[in-house]
Image 1 (spheres, helix red, strand yellow):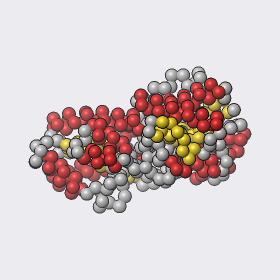
Image 2 (image 1 turned 60 degrees about the vertical axis):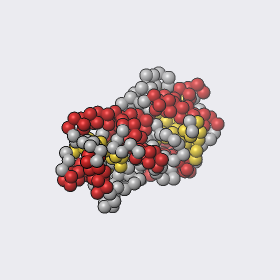
Image 3 (image 1 turned 90 degrees about the vertical axis):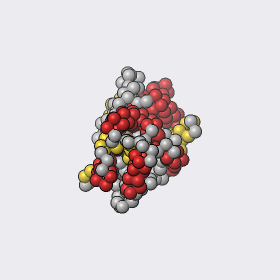
Image 4 (image 1 turned 60 degrees about the horizontal axis):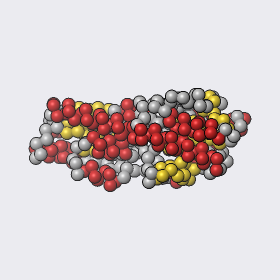
Length: 342
Ligand code: F6P
């Protein structure tokens, strides 16, 4: 038996832990593992490295991915799908275990519909896949946000300022909401609930004037937008192979409104890729290990076209179509809970 593994899309802490788990579990079965480099590009170009106990030694705590990643969409390249099928056959790959988010697993779904036996592994710091409670990377990103908020609190208080922290989250506000809850944010703005600028200002004024809290810390997801705007603020025109724009700027927008319309001093921190880098949290290491090992179990029992998932702390598998039926919004109970602490 020979299986292929790849990591696609934005990297996330815990990818190496998943690669290690797949390799080690497959090793126990006596299988060979090919690690394709840079996501689907590696399959298109037959660019791979053999993975075994030795090659995955010491990678559990490492951020990034030893395989590299890319946002390559084979279905956007001429002859791409045919090439994928041909290369997998030539290399004698019996099954694939792609690790990724909506884009990488979207390609996996189409390939599986063309008959490729595969099991997806959910990864994205955005946590916006359906049918799994958590995806690999979210926990570490939330730790980073919570740590940033602790630091911003002390400087905000010292200077009597409003600090705006812009975090990742294209369609869903999981990072903003969980990070904001953990770090005691005074306001959380997410893509799911467009906000009214006037209400944000009133909230800050109330804190200052009624509660005598002379500083505030706001967390805003990059995909959040004011009701007045039709779409999220983008950094530059153009889209990637999956049609995504590069978001960024909402934090600056909010801080500017606060300074201009209220006269309070405001500063912005864009946390950016710090949320994706670094060593995974223990939670992400364990989640990735459980999911990676389960993917090998699925291959062994011949369950394909699925994604391994965490549901109520049990590892299970779900059809890829169900996991990819859109973008999973943040749990509104959590979002509401945060309001009690504003
Ligand atoms: O992986 C998802 C994500 O974290 C989004 O929240 C963000 O918009 C995107 O990645 C940015 O990725 P990059 O800068 O690598 O294109």
